[in-house]
Amino acid sequence: MATVDLRDVKKVYPSGVEAVKGVSIAIPDKELCVLVGPSGCGKSTLLRMIAGLETISAGTVAIDGKVVNAIGPTERDIAMVFQNYALYPHMKVYDNMAYGLRNRGTPKDEIDSRVRSTAKVLELSALLDRRPRELSGGQRQRVAMGRAIVRNPKIFLFDEPLSNLDAKLRGQMRVEIKNLQRTLGVTSVYVTHDQLEAMTLADILVVMNAGLVEQTGAPLDVYEKPASTFVASFIGAPPMNLLALTGSSSGPMLADGTAIGFAAPETQAVTLGFRPEDADVTFNAEALPGALVLPATVEAVEPVGAESFLHCAAAGSRIIVRVSGRATAKPGDQLRVVAKAERLHWFDQAGKRVD
Amino acid sequence: MAPQLAITLVFFYWPAGQALYQSMLRQDPFGLRTRFVWFANFRKVLADPAYLNSIQVTVVFSLATAIVAMVVALLLAVMAEKAVRGKGLYRTLLIWPYAVAPAIAGMLWLFLFNPSIGSLAYLLRSLGIAWDPLLNGTHAMILLVSAAAWKQISYNFLFFVAGLQAVPKTLIEAAAMDGAGETKRFWTIVFPLLAPTTFFLLVVNTVYALFDTFGIVHAVTGGGPGKATETLVYKVYNDGFVNLILGDSAAQSVILMAIVIALTAIQFRYVERKVHYG
Image (cartoon, rainbow over all chains, first blue to last red; front, side, top):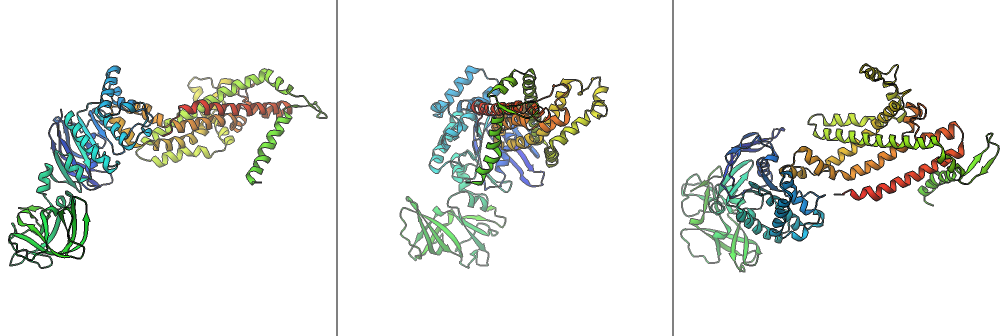
C-alpha cells in the first residue's frame, strides 16, 4: 500500500548540468508507472531520486503522503531491480534473496519460508544453491526480481530490467513482470527506453524528454492523442509520419506546395502527422474527398509477415505506411498514400498538439 | 638456450646449489681445512637456543608487520575512497613512502624515536612512557614493526584502492536498498569482494616481512638489544658475514628456503580456497 508523489522535482549536478528540470507525477496505489524517453532524458536520475540513491536538488518526493527527501535508501523500504541485476557475486541465490530480510532482523524460519515460496513462484527453487555466475541471463533476472519481491516492500523500482535479455526472453519477462505486479499489488515505477515495453506494461505512461515530462496518461490515450511532435515520434513503431506545413491564402499546403484540400483545425498548425496504420495506398486516380492524398514513390518494402511497411518518398519527406499482409507494391512504384482526415494530428510551432 | 633460463641458472640455481652444498661443510677456525659433515650443521643450528629465539622473533615480527601494514592500508584506502575533495593529493602523499629505501626508512624512524634526540621519543616520555628501544626489547620490536609496516603501507594502499574501485557501485546501492547500513555493507559486500586483493597482499606482505626487511633491521636495531630483534634473515647475515661461521649460515638459509616453500604452499592450498574471484 503506497502512493508516490513527485512535486516539482529537480536534479542539478555539481557540474551545473540540470538532469531533471521540475517533474511532477502522482502515482496511485498499486499502479505501475512507466517512465519512458531517450537516453539522457533524466528518467533514470528520477528513479534514483525516488530510490534515495541521488539527492533531490529541489522539490519533494513523497511516499504515502510523507516527504522522504531526507530519508536514506536504507530506510525507505523500496526494492529496486537494476539493469545489470547487481546480484551479490559471492553469495548463493538463497543468500542473495535472504540478504534484505536478514538486514531487517526477520526471524530465521520466516526468512526461509519466504525465500522458498518466492523462489517457487519464480521457478528458482532448483537454483537456490548456485552462485550468480553459474546462472543464465534470464535466471539472473529472475533472482533480481526475487530479491525485490521477497522483501515485500512498499514500492518496486525497475531500472531497464529487461534490456540485457534477448528479444524472446524479454517478451516473456514483460508479461511475467506485469502479472507479478498485478498479483502482488505493489506500486511500481519502471524505467525503459523501449516504447513497446512502455506501452504494454504501463498503467500510467510518462514520456520524458530533456529533463521534462512531455506527456502523462494511459498508454493508449498517449498513443492516440500525443501531446507533442516528440511524443508522436517516440511512441509507436514505426513512428508517426510528420509533414511540415506552410500556410497560404487558399489554406494549408505541404512544404513542396501540394495543397491538402481541406482546412486545418487551427491556423497556427505547422506540422501534420498520421500514423503508418492510419494510411493506405492506392494505385487508382479517383478523387477522395475528406482524405489527405499524397502522390508517392515507393523506396523500400519491409515485409514483417502479418504486415508490411512501405517506405515512400512523398511531399519532400519520407513517410511509412503499414499495409496488412503481403505488399503488392515494389520499390520504384508510383502510387498515392491516403490518410483519413479524422485520423490526422496537428501540431503548432512549438510542437504542441492542436485540435 | 633461452637467455632467461641462463639467467635463472646462473643467478638462482647455481647459488641455491652452492648454499645446499655449503650447508654440509664445516671449516676449521683458521680456514685451512674444510670437511664434509652431512647434516651436522642442521642438527647444530636447530638445537641452538639462539636460533629458536630467532624463529620466535621472526614469527612475532612478520605477523605484526603484515597485519599492521594491511589493516592500516585498508583503513586509509577506505577513507581515500570516501574523500570528496583532494582525492588525488591524498593518494599521492600516501604512495610516497614506497619510494623510500628501506635503510633510509629505518634511519628515519630510528632518529624520530631515538631516546636521546628523537622528537617523538621525547613526546612519549612526556606522556609518562619510559621509552627506550636501546635497552627494552619490546620497545625495539615495536619500533621495528612500525618502520617496516610504514614502508609497506603505501604498497598495500595502492592495491586496496584499486580493489575498492573494482567493487561495482550498483552492488553497494543494491545493498543499501536492501537495508544494510554502511558498516554492514562493508563487511558483507565490500570486504568479501576484496578477498582476491587481500589474499594477494597477504602473500606479498608475509614474504616482505620475512625477507625484505633486512635493511630496516640493520639500520634500526642491528638485531638488538641482545637478540630481541634478530630475525632469521638477520641471523644468517650475522653468523655468516660477521661471525664467519659459514656452514651454520648456509644451513640456516636452506631452512629459510624450506620455510618459504612451505608457507607459500599453505597459503595457496588453504587460504586461497576461501577467496572468491568475481
